[in-house]
Image 1 (cartoon, rainbow, N blue to C red):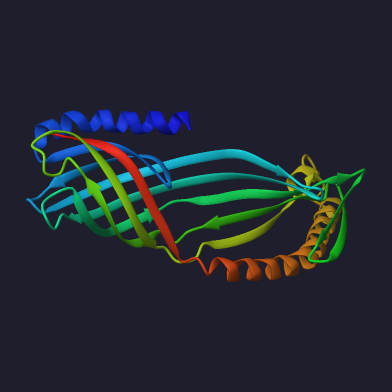
Image 2 (spheres, rainbow, N blue to C red; image 1 turned 90 degrees about the vertical axis):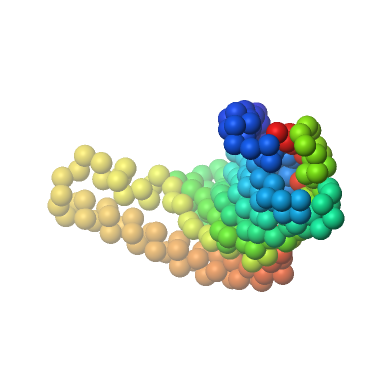
Length: 257
């Protein structure tokens, strides 16, 4: 979080001299948004229209949730870039906005089954599974958004009709993002790591036998678990398909030159 705030502060600092030279119709600022901490720059075209670009970001790494049968460990990245046009119908602070949001947000994590002695035992969709501790590492889960989403919204920018000075900004809108897409994949343990198990071995029948045994065990685990993962992914995707419109909210300040 500290790195995110530092990046935003540096971005604003870089924009200040550029804006002061470019035009008295330029404003720059920062905001706290649903996607994190961000910054923006706006150009006033005339008494009713302006164009604006900005970004927001937030990162949470190595977050863990422990349950009886598994530990969930994941990284969350929220990041968006926005390019919109603002219409101030009465020439004042109130505005309506339309444009695009580029969403680079994702969740990347692992489901790590808890170890019971020398085995990993867990229940998935009502079926019991048991593997050696060095056979199954984790189940990786990756969830991502469509990269580009149309955006519409309303808000206020109290500096818009000022000659210069600080202003308050607020935005509330909707991004037509589409449903988040998810994907599962298996990560095998050290015993099924072909490179590690055959390290230093010369090519020949012995090495080929080890590789064949590892691939056979991998295929067995895949056949057992991937069908269950596919069912789970269909269920999850059906639920995510209900949420294709994402809200966008931000509050902040800017300075008009």
